[in-house]
Image (cartoon, rainbow, N blue to C red; front, side):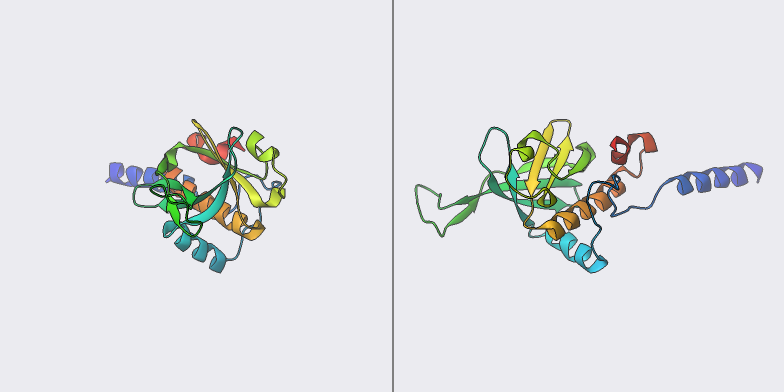
Length: 179
């Protein structure tokens, strides 16, 4: 009975050390404002299917329209470039196709930077409040939302999701530790 009681206490202590997922960004000075629950729910639904349409930026290429999706089951983000007017030699400006799928396993996301923190975004003539970056070991996905509310809602969704993905790891492995 003593072993069972001790084991139960250790498990309760372990469960208490895990934190609940939070929509708040770990850097309280970054300008991110957590949107209402209704906005978060709506954004999360769209993020899952059909995805969210954003601009992706790079230092080596022109800005591109992309669709980014959250795959909760497989714990990954996927994104595809939007190609306008290009398909099998056609030059139809009303035709929209999507390029190849690029995937980022959520466990490989190291941090979410708010604003124009990367070289690709610092080159832009766009408001800081519209930008954010998803940082991985392989580089960054530098994104521009349509407005501050969309950016903040996406960042909050990513915070919640990353907390859930990283929750089974020790706190020193948390994506929030980089703040």
